[in-house]
Image (cartoon, rainbow, N blue to C red; front, side):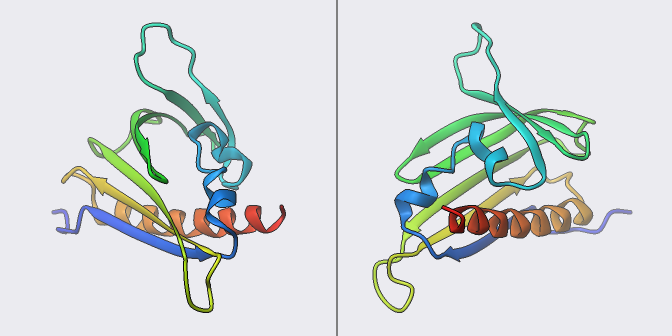
Length: 148
């Protein structure tokens, strides 16, 4: 019997860099330049595709093809369209949003929020795993921006 769980996560961080510097890295084909779990992220060249698709190859051997759904006003939404090995759930759609911090002691920084909405067949283990991986990825993004 599976344990009912919320089918979404939301992780966020304040990154000590201006919005333009952070947003510059939030391109599906550039994720490997800052996300330590990725070894490569390559654009899939397919003349029949009307959308932007990138293949992410993770260091553990997993590969995802991710499709950009939308990118507008400092947010990007993407979905996983294929996975090797196969996902244990039907689908997930993710959004990364970046906001400038415009006042207070963190003025000049960027607030980054990464949300994921899973199909209802995703179990608690999938949700927890995604939560911790997004926290790690946001820390990796902060480190990458700090090197510039």
